[in-house]
Image (cartoon, rainbow, N blue to C red; front, top):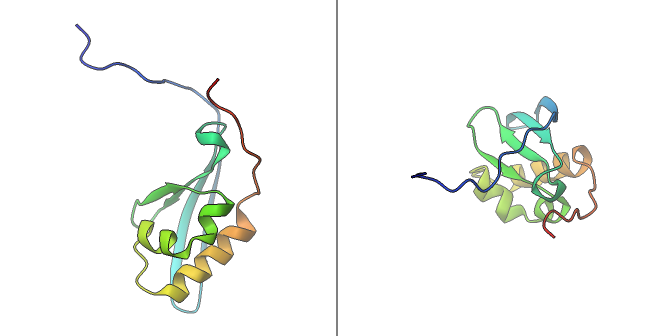
Length: 99
């Protein structure tokens, strides 16, 4: 008897970008994984804390979401991060994954 029902098991050569930068107040180090999975949303991983999320342009506009997911204490830091992501992450078309 199988203990788990496998939902998916995909193998993919993904493009990964590592980028570190500073603002006036904070240093950031991110890994950005570009994949065909997750409706084309890049997986963004904070290399300092291990926190991660899938981001698309709508998510980037939601400052409260960025503050929550990356546990950023200051709203201005979240605004700075949103500006960085809006320049760094590509605008992606919606990709149908499920038929």
